[in-house]
Image 1 (spheres, rainbow, N blue to C red):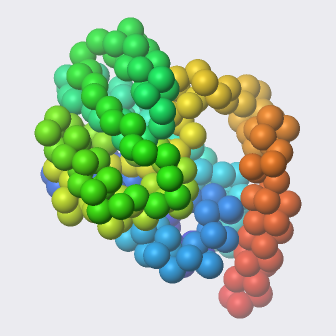
Image 2 (image 1 turned 135 degrees about the vertical axis):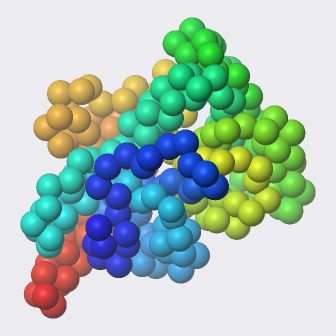
Amino acid sequence: MHLLGYSIATDYPNLPPRHKIIINTINPHSYCEAKKDKYFFQALKSSDVLLPDGVGIVWAAKFLKGKRIQKIAGADIHQRLLEIANANQQKIFYLGAAQNTLNLIAARIKKEYPNIKVASFSPPYKPAFSQEDSEKMISSVNNFQPDILFVGMTAPKQEKWVHAHKDSLDVNVITSIGAVFDFYAGTVKRSHPIWIKLGLEWLPRLLQEPKRLWRRNFISTPLFIKSVLHAKLKN
């Protein structure tokens, strides 16, 4: 479904693919950021699958297209891919986050999905990676030869890095899921399912991390609504 200049998926992708597939997510904040960042826009635009990770995108689809679509968060696609990997005895790789977080993820994977082989790499914490950094990251992934690569380095850095290096990564499925690393590791608590069902997953997170998340809720959300209303008037 084409919405606000993007081709947005209305359901989970059919997997496993016959070729490399890049899965990203979009929400009102990332939409607004992509309007200011051309390379981020290109990264989202070139996604093989772009999932609606936000009630704002779900609302826009209904308001502009009259279509009801399902919100599919990064945590949802993460779980779906883990189930597929476990059923097919596949290998997965986590790229991003601190080593302690990665260790907690590996321990949980071993317990919940025993058929999965897992490896990881914690890249340096910096605003931008050097060529040497990226080469180490790519080598770590390719040496393990995973079926699925999860990237968690916050948006838009993670999507832009994947877009720049996807041709060098020897893996079938690549998806950027940001905060899901911390959710799954248990180092950050995801909103209760009741809040998620009500379409208010953002509220508890905002209360937990107001300094980091206030901009996306009080600046990006109104700007997104303005864009949607403008698109409606154009039609």
